[in-house]
Image (cartoon, rainbow, N blue to C red; front, side):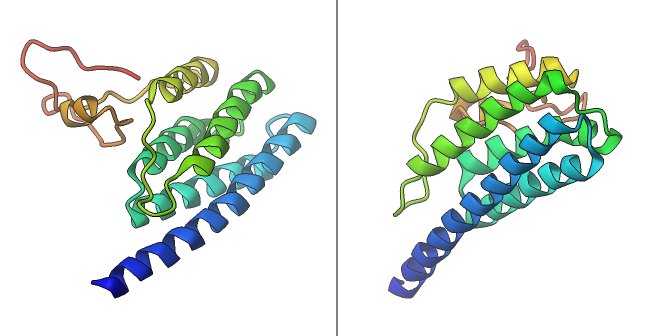
Length: 170
């Protein structure tokens, strides 16, 4: 059992180092987008950095970081794919990346948990969704009760909401 604990500690430390590199890369892509509107290479770079960060966090079981990063990446992906990430969206993206950097600093180095209220995440994601004109994913009951940003796909009939309760939004 001690070996698995050491393995997790090592994996977490590697993740935190990789996450800083990926976050720096995402911030550099954002700076490039500030210079050249909707640059497809910078958009792809931003999308890839966030996707990689979200996947690594998910793989390691860092639920809070994974959910937030995935939600951010999913909001930006359509604009990045279409080359339509406009200058007006960049301050909201920067605010989201700043929060992500702060959260990575606060990840518990022993457990990988981030014991924070997700209210600020939801506000920033909501602002970004308005600017990029993307709908926010609905939260399922399970994620809503845990206070997690929900990244699960939801169908019309099986959206995870309780009877008589409308689907929550970020």
